[in-house]
Length: 151
Image 1 (cartoon, rainbow, N blue to C red):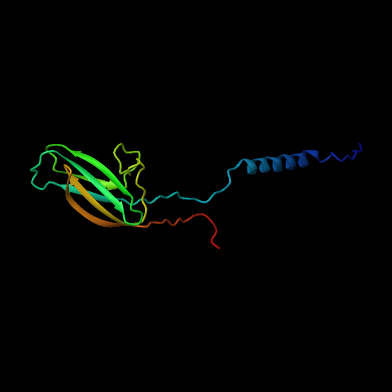
Image 2 (cartoon, one colour):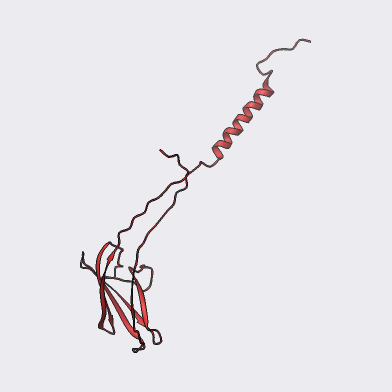
């Protein structure tokens, strides 16, 4: 019996290769692309200011902090109530605007972490108690991306 030659006589092997190749191609498309690890970063400096009634002679008091930028002349204020039994309070400048009590200017705008020299003062029950100055630092971030070929 003679066998007839047709172009599909080897179809099972060719079909198997074709299906395997198509499956491999489909898996390649479905696989997530390899990505390098990337970090998100933030650096926010704060200045801690505080006042302390060393001998707790006042009982409770009102402490109002004033911070003035020498560069812009803009003044920011924050008032804290110190309860009887507590002898002091610390505050951070600038305070997050999401905090219900934050350093703000006369228009109610929150202080920003702007580098430069600042003057500060704390008034207790309306009278100047302490003052000083500070340099607000400039910050920056460097990011290292891992998993990428180095050039």
